[in-house]
Amino acid sequence: MFKKYFYPPIALTAVCVIIAFMLSAVNNFTKPVIEAGQSSEEDMARSELLPEADRFEEIEVEGIENLLSAYKAENGAGYVFTVKAKGFAGDIVVLTAISDGKIVGVRMTEHNETSGYGSRAADDNYDYTSQYKGVGKELEGVKIISGSTYTSRAFEKAVKTAFDAYGRVE
Image 1 (spheres, helix red, strand yellow):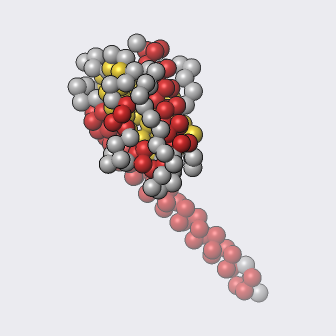
Image 2 (tube, rainbow, N blue to C red; image 1 turned 90 degrees about the horizontal axis):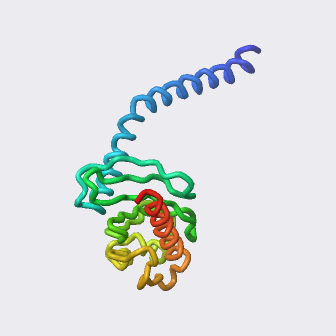
Image 3 (cartoon, rainbow, N blue to C red; image 1 turned 180 degrees about the horizontal axis):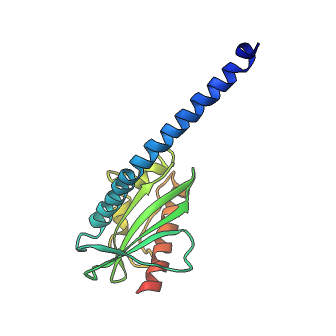
């Protein structure tokens, strides 16, 4: 009777505990490697947006909602801000490089927007982000993407938030 009713749940529980332990061990070994890779990828994205920068130093900016990170170029070339905003299908994450009160470059790094519509704001081939280069805080001349109003507005909001952060550190 014991083998029939109690052994299977005990064996299954033991297998689950062993597998959970093994997954935890694998996670502990791979976590530093994954974090280093993500950090390197973020550094590369910042360097592409602000190529004049030699290295970046993370800085604290208090009181800016949805600001994920702020970095200052150590040689004074400018700042790169990572901001999230609510798009059509979820949050979008935008990197904005600002120098001397003007945008040097912008890039959407994360999104869940509709393919072919909202995703066009992240597509380098669509050329949406190029209209931001050289533009100041007022974002004069920036046009929304037809059919992607929510995404375009979220992108603009993220860039304006980056300018708010820039105003606090400059």
